[in-house]
Image 1 (tube, rainbow, N blue to C red):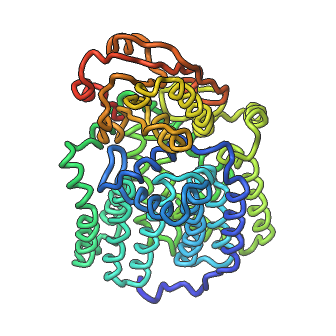
Image 2 (cartoon, helix red, strand yellow):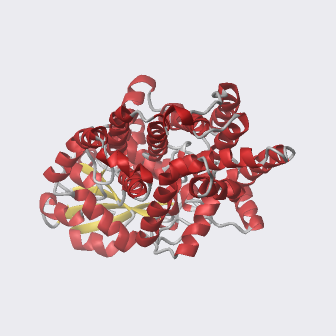
Image 3 (tube, one colour):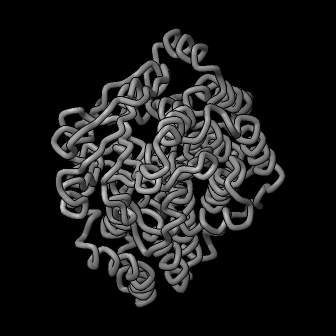
Length: 510
C-alpha cells in the first residue's frame, strides 16, 4: 500500500483523552467494590514465588505485579493500577488503529468508546490478571501489522516479534493471534510478507523471548498441557456455536453490534479496507478455532478493539451524508454502557444487582461446570475471603502452642490458600499449602502433617488421611460460590502416611 495509502487524518488525542479519562475515573470510583477477586490472591502468591513459568500461565503479568508491589505495596490501588492503565492504553490504541485505517475524529471516538462500554473490557481492566495485558498486546500487535501494510516498512516485523514474544510470556493465547494473522496472510495478497526475511526474523525474536518459559515447561514436565487437558475435560462447559456467540455478544455489549458488522464489512467489502482483508480472515479463523474448542467467549475479546476500529471507520464514512446519526450512535453506545456496566463492575449492592439482573433477564454464564449461586461467578468470587481467613485464625489460635508450631493450613484451591497467604500475616498465620495448580509445585513448606487445619473438603477424605479430625469452625457467606459457602474448618491430627508420600496424589491442575 505504501505512502499512497497514508491516512490524511491526524490523531485526536483530546477526544481519546476524554474517553480514557472516563475509563480511569469509573474504575477508581469503584476500586474496592466487593473486595479482591479469587484469582488476584493467586497472582499475589505467584508474585512471591517469581519464576519463568507457572502451571496455568507464563510469568510476565506476575513480574509486573511484583514490581508494582515493590513500589506501592498491596493496596487495592496498587494491585489494580496496571490493569486500569492498560485499559486507558487500549482506548488510545483503538483510536490509533482507527486513524491508521483512515478514520477521523468520529471514528477514533467510536473506537475508544466501544472499548470503554464493553463489559468484557470493563471487567478485564478492573482486576489483576493476564487479561488486561493480553488485550493490550494483541491490539499493539495488530497496530504494527497495519502500519507494515500501510507503509511497506517490513523492518517493523522485528517490533511485531518483540510484542508477540511479550504476549506469549504473558498468556499463550497470543498463539491464536499468530495463527489468525498467518491464515490471513496466506488467504490474501499480503502473502508476499511471508517471503520477507524481516517477517521470519520477527518470528524468531518472538520465539527467543518465549524460550525461558518453554525451558521451564520442559523442566517441570509440561504442566500447562496437563492443566489445559484437565480444564477441558472436567471444568469447561461445551458451548454450542449459538450459545458462544450469544454470550460473546453480551460480553462485548449488544449495542456495539453495528461496529462488529461494519468492521467485517470494512475488511471484506470496502474498497479501502481490502488492503487489510487479512484481519477479516484472521477474525474468522480464530473464531472457528474457539468454536471447535468450546472455548470461553472472553478468550475472543482481545481482537475486538481492532474490529471496533475498523467498524468505526466504516460508519464514519457511511454517516457522511446522514450526520444526525453520529450523535445517535454515540448516545446508544453510552446508554448500552450504562445498562451493562453493572454486570462487569461492582457498582450495585449485591441485592440490588440481583434484582437488576432478574429485571433484565440477563444471567451471565461462567462457562464452567460449577453449581452457581445467587451472583455470577465473577462477582461471587469476591465474597467471603476475609471471613474465611478470620475463621481459620480463630481456630488456629485455639490450638495449644505445641500444635501451632507444627500446624499446616490446607486450602482446597488457590483462592483459599492465596487468601490465607495474603491476610495471614495480620492474623499470625503460617503460609497455606494446597494441591491446586502452582501451589502443588511449591510443595508443603516442610510440614509433617501431624496437625493440619483443613478448609472444607470431604470428611471421608479426612478419615482416609488422618487418624482423627474435628469440626472447629464454619465459613458462611450467602454471596460466595456454593462450593465456598458453609465450609467446615477441620482440625486433623495423626497423618497416616508421611506428607511427602501423600503429596503427589494431592495434585490438582485445573
